[in-house]
Length: 611
Image (tube, rainbow, N blue to C red; front, side, top):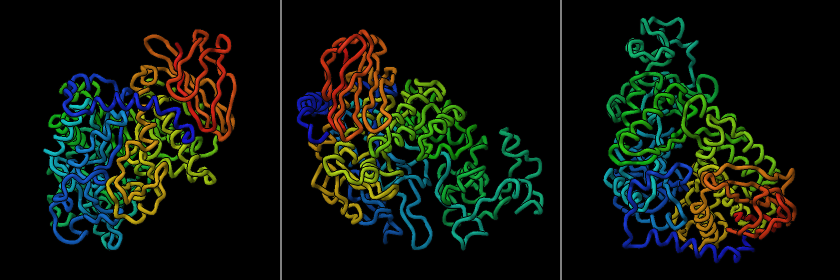
């Protein structure tokens, strides 16, 4: 809690000294083998959008282009355009990132993008990285391949891993169906109404003789699909005929070409994601090509993992081939714990939907969207902690149960949904500034101590508050010129996004640093099994035990999601007789074998280690 911050100050100073020693100038580089030996659940991830983080080289702000923003993509006053952040700037701020105890950095896609796209009057730029044209090169707005290599090497020298955000679902919008040129985008056309073997519908002229449909994944079968004009008349603008790299990506035959996804039914995996060219990931040539593309980034840069965009919009059979091939390739390159986690966006607390993508797609891990939903409901709003108990009880749905859940990245907010602080203000509209800060700190305390791999969204540690999702949640860390960012009242500071926000004394930064140190020093909080001890049926106590996998030592985690103090007994192991407070207020001794008295202030938390 903000008003109880002085209790944390001593612990933070210890943590800051530990973290600071890692980044002090003149220190020895951490052996890369030691970094790669860490298991995925040992990490604390920082998720960053390079364009919005730090500008290290103003010469690349326009990406080598000339003209207005529709040519260069650069307009630092518009939320939908490049702002100037780059890889050199990110590298220059590694001290700041590591000062929070972060051990892995996840970057939004850095590949070369189509600079600007969208209907006339509603254009925006590819600052976010999800409109890829060249899968082999860094976008010139962000720097060069050499700049990325320098960033990865600098991170590795500090013992930090690097996770790339990658895409297999689509490329930039280049293919233009003739029938919809004037409309901008096309509605989806199904396989039943527009089969592969007819041109323009079931009554059209026969094409692609002998093609057995996309369920037959054999090379021989797909060699018989030679005409992409089954649903629409496909056209590629002459100026963009060879814009994509590798070259095979320029051939429309490797795309579905069926129009825009409705995000349901077959269109979910075969339709264009808001106009973006949807790859035919059933085609074995596409599977092999995407394995080769991403294997080369492992070869050339020695990265440590991939976050996979739009996983649920790609057929499961693709992932079942691609993910094992990538993991095996990484092991051959001396990366034994290569991490892959998929994005399956949902705004509901239904772990079954997320677990399905792990089980059926054979994706090693998935981003824990249900965790984020439960945190918004309980800490950001007024849902009972029993919702959290239900969430964790359903860990059994994952392929390897709780083992998988431990290695799924957890988060509070992100660049698509919006920031956690925004949800706090929405869910607790009567909360004053102190209570808002308390809730945001409580959310981070839970994420950093409960099961899963905690993922901090850049700027959250500086109290950024988004106005919404997508472009509205992608603020600048360096002084911003975007009016709709700069008018936001931040949490825990008097600054705005018009200021540079690198304050290592911000209460959220300090809280994250303290809890990161506690997590990193506690095997139980990284790898230990988790057991719910108590979950109130109204805002109040959520108590969890985690256990050291080597010694069985118990760590009791206590969280008060209500605005009232609580005091009650909580069950613990009979062997847990005495406790040490690692954060917050803990009873020093058990009240009786198997029971401890818990006292927490409003919106407070505690981490108690049994002796």
